[in-house]
Image 1 (tube, rainbow, N blue to C red):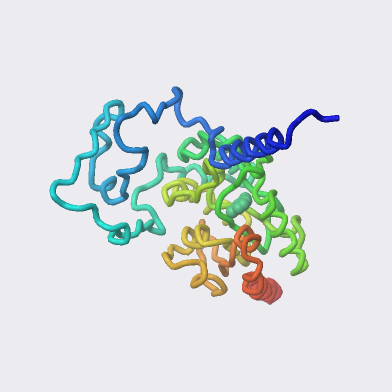
Image 2: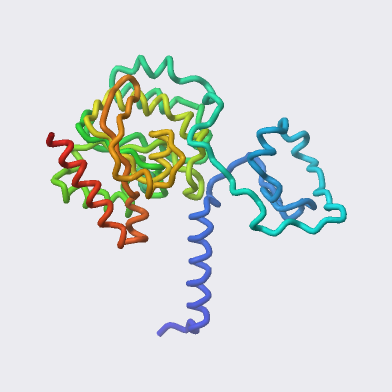
Length: 293
Ligand code: URA
């Protein structure tokens, strides 16, 4: 008979949940050589004074080891939260990716060679915290290329895109239009998991973009299907939300290859919002018709 009291069980359960949350937030992703004791720093919490505008205008942080204390505002009350402008992320970053991969990747004759180049590529910061490269799964050449946002935890562990819960739903969606894994090519706009499953930044996507362009050229799809807003914004260079972008045909040219392209709702969103499945189903039927035409 167990001598544990109910409160011990509850405590263990709560501790397990806290640990799971820490893991999901990326606590196992070491970002520096030495640990940082944020609580020992006397200034503001990390990120509290961050703004995209000030980062763009200002030179690099003058002294990371000795941060400047926050200046108290003189004689004015802090603005109400609603007065702050929303952070705007451009669909494309202005700067070129670190290390121009364009010249090299054009020489990759197949996905095997492209994968080897990716494995040695150091121009995307996500690689530092990811466990594995997630290149693609499915056929090497296919009439349908599916491009998602970024690998998650399961994908990072397995080294393949869309193998977690969202991937399982994606497989069911494809089965519903008569397609199996060996008939499609599945990848993401970035090839490494962002820590804590955050959305990849435009800069991270741009760093991976030359590889994605070459990948599109090698897979030579008739139809490209973007999953979710992040992928659609990066591929189509638009700033609208996914509800406006989805379900519309566009001409896409990547790596010199032309394809018809459409965006639909991300399967992870559909898992959270089953009522939206009807919209995704309509998009899939349009994809099925385009593949047959
Ligand atoms: N979500 C994505 O966008 N890509 C994956 O590979 C997994 C989940």
